[in-house]
Image 1 (cartoon, rainbow, N blue to C red):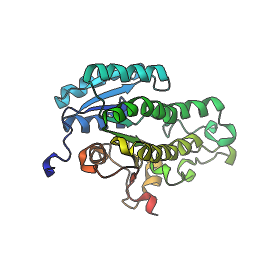
Image 2: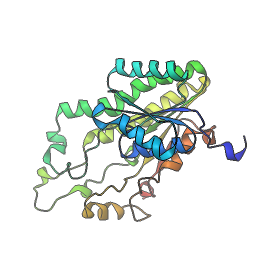
Image 3: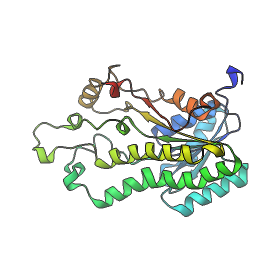
Image 4: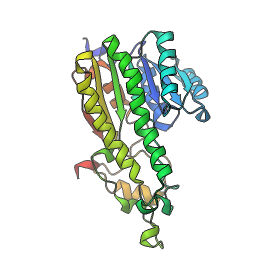
Length: 274
């Protein structure tokens, strides 16, 4: 293949879960600019149709929005059937959806393991892990039947390292009241890497490549104290800009990574090197 065509996604249908969120929209933008057709899948309340329309206007590409709860098997299958009916194929699946409370919201004692509710545990695993499984089961199977496809599971630098709970400490709070990164995030993200390896070998002979991307923290207006603490843990000395994962997304979703499967690409400014 000519080098200029390595990153070409012309007319490839790319489903992006959590597509109406901060990074989901950036993933979709990268797909659109490479000629693909992003499908933003998210809960109806996140306005996926409206955000798809805005992205289509700014990129000049065809962008679709779809309101769906990916924790429900029937909803995922309905989406798969609709896309196959409309396009005849699903080329790319980016499992991006996850529950991840903002730093500000995490400053409460409920985040601590001893007080973490079963309801929140189940909800976080349902979105971040079960939703990915259901989408792979339905859309990945369609790719395997066709003999071609790409699945990308968006994990985190916390798929390879533990959270540094010192980032969240607040002066004046007792130890058992200090906020922490919830346990579910450190369960879901490594599990996505495990799912990646399983599916990569399961569908290797069916032409379906499966990889994971583990990004580091993205700056999005977090409190200055948190940003300073986290930046001090990163060799590059800063958090990622919101568009700095687009190159990795494009690489992993395109033929540029045609001999890569079952891998976890860590893009974290060097944090996990220390």
